[in-house]
Image 1: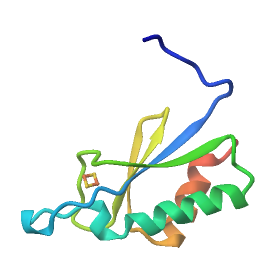
Image 2 (image 1 turned 90 degrees about the horizontal axis):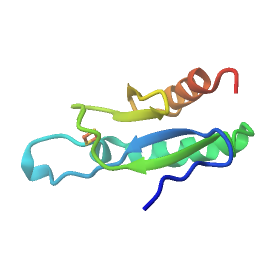
Image 3 (image 1 turned 180 degrees about the vertical axis):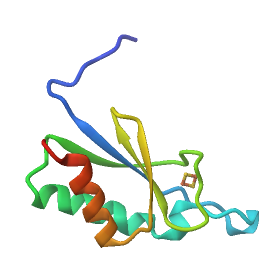
Image 4 (image 1 turned 45 degrees about the horizontal axis):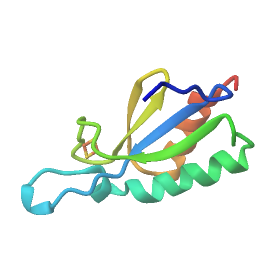
Length: 101
Ligand code: FES
């Protein structure tokens, strides 16, 4: 195995869509509306012409499980955000994270 590099600089938004069994009594991003936000972010990245600069991918649990909303990670900065899973908040987050790209 050897490391590989992307041919261009790429930012990555990781949206936790982990869906935990409700019987555990612990909330999860998937229960809190993360999947629609993942789809919204993918669509919005394309609409804003950020394809090739930003990729939106789903992730499993990032181990910051919120009681409400979902966790979005940003790479390579390794920043994590607690979002309320609304399109308004997703828009604001995308604007903040892609300023200057
Ligand atoms: S379930 Fe999303 S961070 Fe754990």
